[in-house]
Length: 320
Image 1 (cartoon, rainbow, N blue to C red):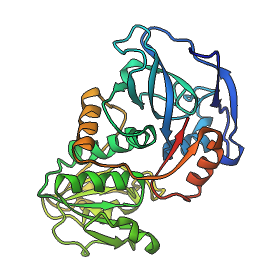
Image 2: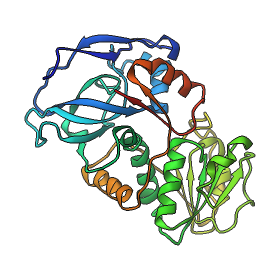
Image 3: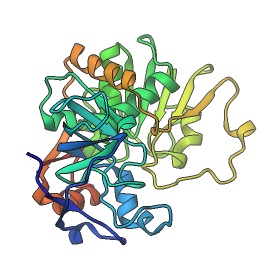
């Protein structure tokens, strides 16, 4: 039985984590082309922090808004879709939590195009660590870097949820992996990599034999990362952990070494086959997602505060 009222986080202006509160709102009414999902759990993401603290001001953001760009759960009402009631799904992106209400709630009304069926024995909390994080890692490694088992991969900014996922996938594939962190105390968190390196900001000349590099620090260190790979190597810029969002004064002729390739991954276009492949890979290689902490929905404010203040290593998951 679908209730009439649900608990949710609703934002209409910039909001600090400590000021986030659950409120009661009507459960969304289903409509053609959309499905109602009973949310079981969701992961927290840096882009949601950007939205909550600043981007919420933008005209293109629908307000008031329930944030959250991903979730896992069950179909509560399939509407006119191909889904079945109670079917296990993951959902992500496509304007979720920006153009329309997202996952920080007990129920979410989502477009069929960005809801995907999954077969997995993972718990709801483990599964919630997968959609956006592993989709982004998967796309970066395979679509952009064309990663093969004979590659040696550099993950710059390895101590984030995306970094951990990339290391797991690359090691399961059979690659050699080097990973970096800018905090010495976090080197031990990179134990699954073959080599853990303290990032001083200048790493060119430190590595030998790097054929592929996943840049998660972003434009702040991209020029240096381009000089860490061998000729014929590929660098994929996916993250912006360094807090620098664009490359001012970037000169492609001088800043990209001869024979090195630069690409980037934009995670707005998930597809059913990709999500099926990801969960099949996880199942086949017995990968357990790296979760830093799990919070109940009632403690969403605390979870957001800990994310904002970098108190958790690994993915933060909220259980509904």
